Image 1: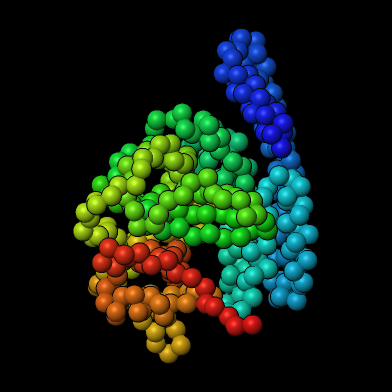
Image 2: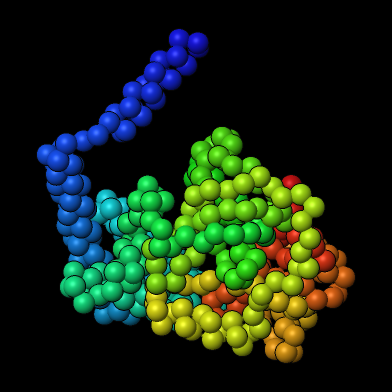
Length: 353
């Protein structure tokens, strides 16, 4: 074991030395040319995958959406697999989502999903023109599944957000054997939200351990987007002890949240929902459904899924809370709640075996 650790350390040192070694002009040109060649190769693959996807969607519309309801999930999985092969994982995920539109207004959901897919495909075609703004182009590529270079983002000074942050909360989801941790940071001065993603395989720990409800001085860098939300941590200090905050979070009402989401969609039509803080709201249960009532007495249906919201009612004591929820313009999916300086992370219902 000690020999393996020593060899691993030596490889890491050599790799770092190689990265830090100054490159000649010729080496830099070769590196850039190789990078562009790989990028163009992927774009060619994506174009082929999109051509097949557009043909698939036209066939669905031509045959009628009614026949889709009888299709097995493998019908969508096969199409998604072809998009994975075409290096378009974002589109593949949206195709899989089409298989989950059963129930309720499934025809409307199916048409909305197909329409969004078709919009992304046509936007990618238009993105080859220089008339598309750079940030919108990043949103198009992001919807398809292209990743932005984190190394280049951290060097960028344009999209940084410095200051005092509150870590409102964290959620962890499991995707195959990959655990995805979503950390929601609230910028005290501006009220802006930033979403930081961390990944860990199997039972491996996440790179950072942070305490929800705590305050940190940090520098975050947003990913390039017309509607920035996801961010990287460039620098973060230790947890601040004995920091006083009145917990009056800058949030939205139902009406202002709809206006806010409408503005975001006008700038980036590829987002499906957005985490939004509903300030001074109440959550209640009526006729087998959950509802949010804001301070202006407007109501919004809550989509619970597997969430158990009764602990939220107990947490608030029936009073006003600040609720962070994923909002799609019609319904809210609660993520966490803040009340009198305390944070409640919402969890799925416990089922007995």
